[in-house]
Amino acid sequence: MELKERAAYLKGLMEGLEIGDSKEGKVLKAMYDLLEDLCDTVADMDDDLDQVYDELDAMDEDMDDLEEAVFGDDEDDEEEDDEDEEVEAEYELTCPNCGAVTVVDEDTLLNEQVCCGNCGAEFEIEFSECGEDCECGDCTEENE
Image 1 (cartoon, rainbow, N blue to C red):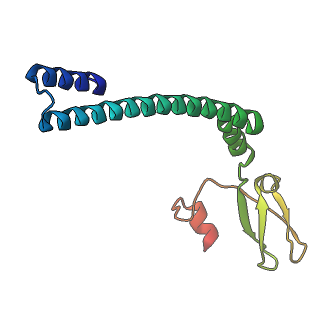
Image 2: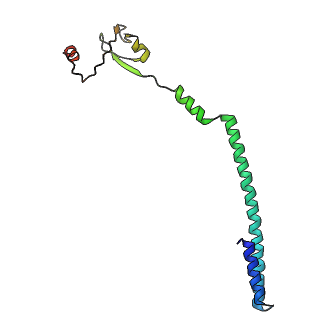
Image 3: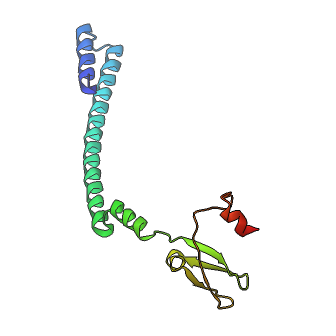
């Protein structure tokens, strides 16, 4: 039951008791009047709160529209940023002439000829499928 319905139920009980105008009866009637006023106040506040929530929801929707108009769709922007920020691999090469370390990107490395930034010597890059721990025989002979 809602508050007003409960208050009306109490009024019905009071009338059924036929309390009358005794001191106790006057107190109970005053308490009922107070309870009825409180129920009306709470009902008004509840209506006002519903209106505030409706207005707040409308403002939230307007704010979402405004954000989209100003900033665009964040998910699309994040995906585009991730694609734009691809990091190119860099490789460190040691010059066989002076021993200086030169950092090159993948395109320069694939040209198979690199110029040392320190001494200016050009040297070729040879690619092999073997790694440092290779035991194929060709690599171990070259390292000795």
